[in-house]
Image (cartoon, rainbow, N blue to C red):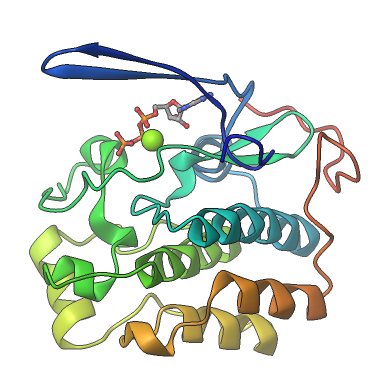
Length: 225
Ligand SMILES: Nc1ncnc2c1ncn2[C@@H]1O[C@H](COP(=O)(O)OP(=O)(O)OP(=O)(O)O)[C@@H](O)[C@H]1O
Ligand SMILES: [Mg+2]
């Protein structure tokens, strides 16, 4: 698993019961969260395609290894100075049950906005929860906004679960992206595509092949946090 360049390498584990520490490769740069909400960078279409493709490539790898990420969100998508995306914090089901605060700092520390409806409902989940999270991330990259920012947990969960509501798609988004995001955040997990199918769609949309070891980066003069 650690051989995929889109996944942070696990270097060691330290158990000091009841605490568990994971020592991982350090990704010098920042996260997609930093890029979007600290630097407040508006991403170009090429950058969005590149990041989406890299996330999908690494996620396809995890899913083929029967690993469900469960906490796919911008702060867990690290981006190095070459524009290489590396996923971290996979396999941790620790967001479930957490309350979302109205306070933006608390919200940033752990948020259920990326959780699929079936996970919010506490129902059995599959790897399709990661596809839903991916859709919210793609929406966030396009809008530069945080989904459901002004809502508390109960309000958000009601909209997503009962009303099948989703963040508003900007009218200027391309038809391909509207269709891809729309199917990825489908209410029924069975209607959501696999990352393999998403990679096919992204390729048709002109996404570059995933960057390996900093080659072929579309990023110019990247100076991430
Ligand atoms: N291997 C790494 N290299 C560089 N930065 C990392 C690495 N792992 C995590 N980070 C960054 O460290 C910060 C803290 O990560 P952490 O996982 O503790 O919190 P989080 O992802 O913001 O929220 P949560 O507590 O819900 O996981 C984040 O900004 C994250 O992007
Ligand atoms: Mg994290």
